[in-house]
Length: 424
Image 1 (cartoon, rainbow, N blue to C red):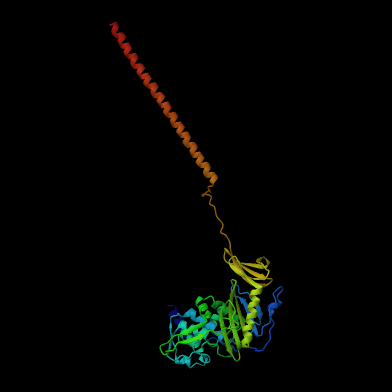
Image 2: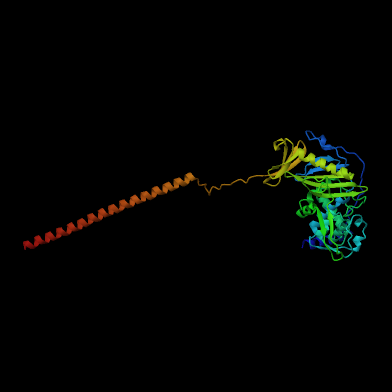
């Protein structure tokens, strides 16, 4: 059912393209520009290392707090980290068991070129198989076929939905032109926007399963009798790689000539999940950059729960050190925002307790009053019992007196009759 309605939505969206096409703007990309680490300028903030990547971000996935910012809102070309959004949309709008038939239209699309798995027109994979090779092998032919399938036959409809979804997630400097990440001047993003997209994607359990995989196996299909095996080439995830980073549960790599290397990764340690995005660096630099960022994050920050939420703590800091702002959300909820000075580090909610209203006609009975009532009842019962005994005693006495009077009167009458009889 999910798949059916997702495809219908794609068809409807495709029809709307003629009426309201999504406008594209050429990116103002300044490759080679140098940016400062602005978080190092925050008062009492732990000083972060320099990285070779042109732009980068380290974000707490639970609180959304930005722990490291180097040109995070500067536009760059994403390359294949685009596929994070492609995967997220497919999971939201299609079923994992859907049968995806590859079309000649897709296989002839330039955006399906580059890295691919050699699919043939008419060949069928399940949607889950498509998503596995999309994220592990970074297959462009699969990315484009997913777009056509979920878009109800229109790749452009799917791409438009990618842009809409990005806006829904708060992305302000992102525009997608295809589902694979192939070079296009109208296909761009920022480190910050990609962190927001990845933050949303890892809320999906199936997405997490897919990006954690070390290997993916595609068995024989209706048109290919071979078994194809693909290995993870994200070095922080691949356990055989020298850059393997403990706790890294996945992410996505990207590379084109103009974008250079791009990388998105997530790591969980000690209950804290951090997201790193680094854009435009050489391949060895980009992995070392992220190792530096994650080391910096876990050494200098921690996670703390607050009522109704969670906050990011600096080393040797407690919640009492925060500046707190409160806003009302409805009659019984107060939203609390936590700041290090003026820098946001998390939020929580406080529920106001409901007041208990006592009605005059419903007096409260306390244990003391209950005891007094029982005592009065027992005293009343004793009194009534004593009165009953008195009434019975008096009754017996009166009955005895009456009986005695009757007997006396009877005897007296007999005596009088005898005396009268003698006189005669």
